Length: 318
Image (cartoon, rainbow, N blue to C red; front, top):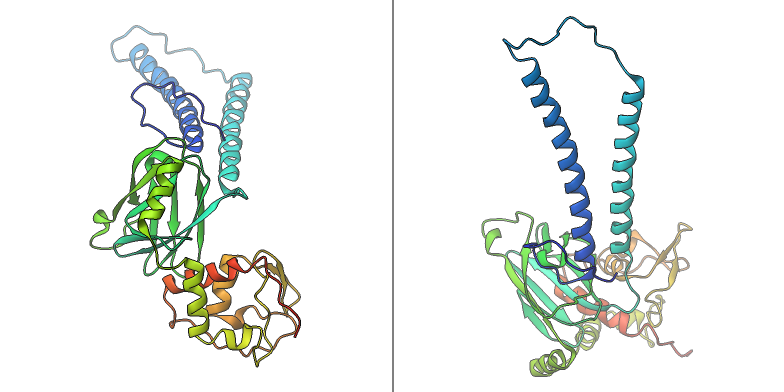
């Protein structure tokens, strides 16, 4: 979505193409509301003036109902508001359509901070550094209560729920520093749950990544946790228990015992780790123990990142 030219003076600046489209929709809604309100107040004040006490107005004629006016007024307003609905629904669906080339950044919300983890292992607290012109996908979850990830300049806001993953994407089109808020009351220090999004051009962003100098990538940390928690004993190449292979799993359809088929996305992998018996893979016994309460949200993100990293691999037959 390319950004249209900002033509309203003193309007809050936007930093994404989506933000500019949201602004245009808001102007459309505001215009319709102002026109309807202006008409109602015009009729209200006109009748109040024409038929006020002491004014010699004709009050004896019968009120005649015009079906032509009634039908025309109802049909016109119905079409206008349906058009606004279609417009906003189309914009919502465009926002929900995740681009294929998006770079994933992991976000964990907790009272009262935003914990950000990049695929390269870089970590941030209450800050999010992203490259200019690159589509960014945020994979978000909450460690405690409901939070809401809100960047006003991008015109994006999404609730972050505990116990599940939420996805949100944006493509910054202007370099700078932008405010990040929690827009859902989440406890005593909710008003202090502040952050900032730093948009850098490509060379400066690469310089920032290099300066962080992480010891290992997020996927490498996930592999270490994968082995430390005994997962490789069943899902590894030399596993002693028959379990589904994880190489090449991510993004592929998975048939279940109940006959349904699910896609192995981030949410499915997370749920399979915490509650493996909720969706049992066809042809396998439900022998995996649940890890609910044993792994933190940060650890889950690392393990999910590791499983995603081997999506292009194929296990060699023994």
